[in-house]
Length: 90
Image (tube, rainbow, N blue to C red; front, side, top):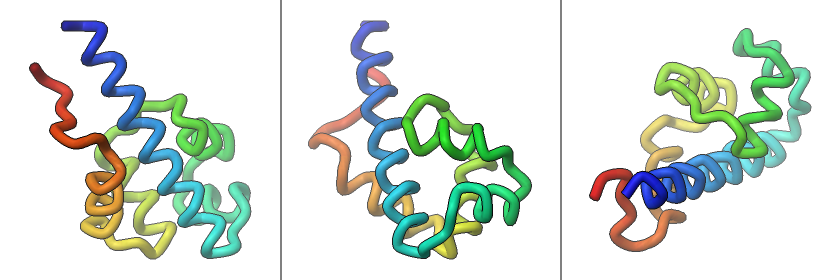
């Protein structure tokens, strides 16, 4: 059961990372610029785009604001990219 949780958590992180990176590139902003705008280190933003970090909800909110992407849109995009019946609990 723990292995399934860890596997699904990685899927969630990777899908969120793709959305964040694609949204940043669509805004034509560098990691340096956007991370400075929201008060985040460049390395933390880069780790988020690589799917290395499992962010706190407040971090996701800050990132969506920095991307001018409504949080509801970010969540909808994320949910549409996850496998059917995705869950972190069994």
